[in-house]
Image 1 (cartoon, rainbow, N blue to C red):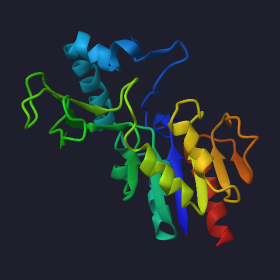
Image 2 (image 1 turned 180 degrees about the horizontal axis):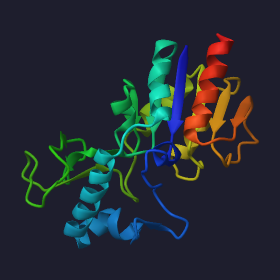
Image 3 (image 1 turned 135 degrees about the vertical axis):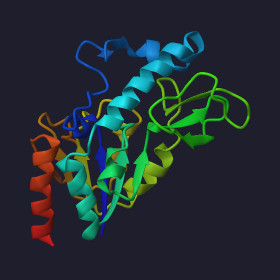
Image 4 (image 1 turned 60 degrees about the vertical axis):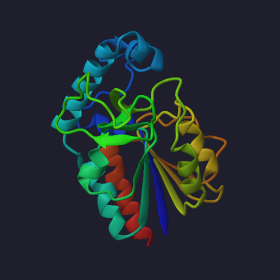
Length: 228
């Protein structure tokens, strides 16, 4: 049975990583358009590089929480496919083996000339002057505002094949990721875990768990295993 899970910032928040954008529209004190767009990279690549170096240091210092671990444990019972909006690698470090990163992953770099030319970053820092094999500057392997989301079609196909669907820690406000729920077959049970459940009235077979990720996944695991 295929269990498809879409995760957002809420699952990483319980590992101490801040959500992508605070209520004032800033990310770690920066306007996102100054650090997370192709135009920002063209204007001030040094600032963008250092911003992501700091985010990477935070990610490497963080540890997977119980929610990440439960998703990994569910692989004993289901074919679990995780689609995440998060750029951290906490799912992988918790033991999940099938993880698709919609917005890239911060522990990798990419050529600023050819996005699918990627490399693992050794340590926490990516420096100006580090080049890809084509001779162009390496940048964070992160999808910025205004860039296409290369993994979205693969993610949509995974959603079409779901037997169970779980949405965790996302407000369904960031597109195209938010549209993935539309690819889940109508009759498939859809579990939504969040303290504030997003608007989902037009979907059938929705089970709401109004909790943060750790407690919500503890409840979900119990529900799923009792139904087997």
